[in-house]
Length: 598
Image (cartoon, rainbow, N blue to C red; front, top):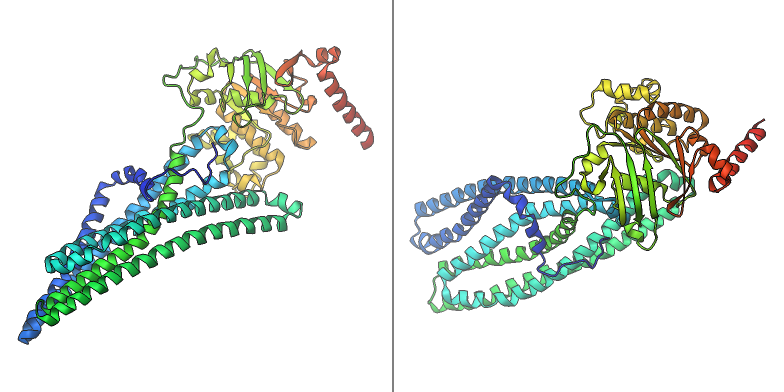
């Protein structure tokens, strides 16, 4: 299901952060160090007013210079202890934050890479990347400075209030009575901040998704003079993100201003009453000074808590979005007790009365009672008009999806009974749109086979007719291919994909329009590589260009999700059906192009 702005579970503003507590439990030593340093820092701060009271009531009255010197020495010692505790707090808290975010990013990335294609049919990859970046930065802030400030200020606030009661119960009663008036609005404001922060983060994610998509297609954008259109659309999404962020900022500003005014306003009123007690002689100046300092500490801590609460509310929205990904369950997953595929592998494939519709288009049937069998070692070509369901066969074989009804079997085992890893280890695919990663040529060929040696990779490249161009590159197999293989030609990318498939040594080969976009020279080289790759393997070939399937043992013609014709090239031509019509159109065009060339 696609994520929407209104998917917000009800509850407290920072409740989603509780889902991240298991990450903290992994690093108990760091957490204990952080809590100890936080407590030590707060306790040191709370000890300062006691020293001030003693000095005011006794030091100045006795005019004892040594007494005052001793107390100033003690204050300097407390300052040194406070600085040490603060340094420890910073180290432990920031380290915990970085460690939690690193683990969280790893877990979220592992989760999204394991999600089924159905998830990506309805969710933009750019938005997911935004969650991995912007949202995790928000979490790092929460588990770093915001969380430590919240804990420290909580300890200071509670400790200062306890000392206020100890210093003057009467004044404390007046001060503490104002707390409910302050706290309840803070909670209400915090929920508003979280709601607006979530909206801002969702808007930013959509902006990031559009930017990622546009940058990835920069050449297409420029080819169609679409720079101005793309820039205008991006500017509009940025403005939407700014408006959403400004709404969140406005809520935080109101929250902070209200909290500070209420806190300090109540303290001023209480202190005015205390001053009257000093004038009447019922309280010493030192006691009032001590109470004032504790009041300031409590007020400052409570005021900072209001700001930190806003940050934690924002982090709560980010945590909510990330935990949605962590809790997303793949539509396709291993059975509880997987059945092992037969060994040695034979490469037999069978579809039995398969009906299928993509989850994002449930009312459109893509395969309509499809049945077929492919014998081990056989080469079968699948042709037909666009939308006939050819590529869907590959998606079901790779178990990207499961049939609505019917079964798909590999070596006699229903794919739903086997593990995904076992299934995909027995399949190698050479797609039409080859994926090349921004890594070295070696790593691209060895993708999916991490322990492949340089010798194995080169042998696969030689078999794929790719070694010749690779060794001419500046750094050979260590040459970086660039993002999406932008530095390579279409034929070169295709041959790298074939080398990748050869290296897997899988018994079943899937070729999806592997030569459709190549020039004549590249097609000759790629076809030669494919001929070697197909030897002794069960091969399924999808092709629009019928010239590439003439060597197939059988040709299956699909239309509207089912097989409507089957045979060799000659027998299908003689039948005069859909295949014959496609052949007349294509070969007539080829003859006309040849005549034109002459």
